Image (cartoon, rainbow, N blue to C red):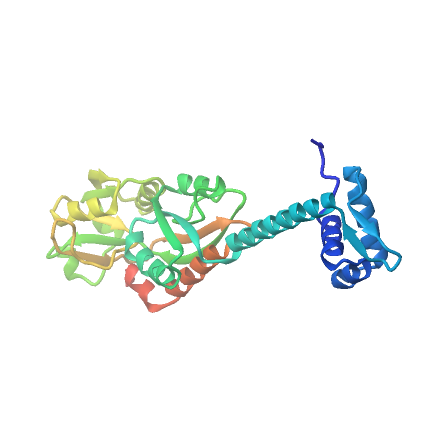
Length: 311
């Protein structure tokens, strides 16, 4: 076996065209090349296999030998396989088929991602979506190692090689059980939470962010419980364990425990979190581009307002 490829696709196409057309001139016309290029291709193919593959007439006609016809059949199959590989490869970049692997670090992502993805899946039956709950680090690592196609995450430090765009800035708000004194007011302030019982969403970035808010306001609440999911925080608040400071809210006012909750704007406004989309820098697959377009459309429309609490 040769260690390198001595015959290019161009040479094999020229040889096959000469056999199929039975003429060097006709093959040259079909390939839009000079007749000398076809003749040279035949010479190189014969030299590679050290055998006569065609007989030539003075009128520049060619007739394949038995070996020449067998080789032509093999080259034809090879070129067809090559074309199939190229077509499949282009389909990976252009068709809305296959798998779309979405990583998210957004506590209320279930409030918006299903509605964004559903139209894509309905319009493209060959597409399958996979969702993975992540933290910021694992979301970005999955994107860079190829296990995720696109991520939706809450800002923070972005790794080299990841392109991002801001979807929305989400301000913090106070979550209280229905009927709490704070829910009777138009707004609350962080100062009001001095010494108050607090349930903390203790996730990477989210927990540190909330603590920084209180430090900047010189406020020290009493953290009575922590939880790693937004729904547990909401359920603890609904059960009367304490209050919470969150950023995004789901499109329901009821906790898993069946308790009514009220979101109260904070005033003065405090720094918010940036919800961002991320993908590998370069030219994303068409399915990723379609998903990003759907994300942008959704967050530029009225539905996104339901996820934020503003005064």
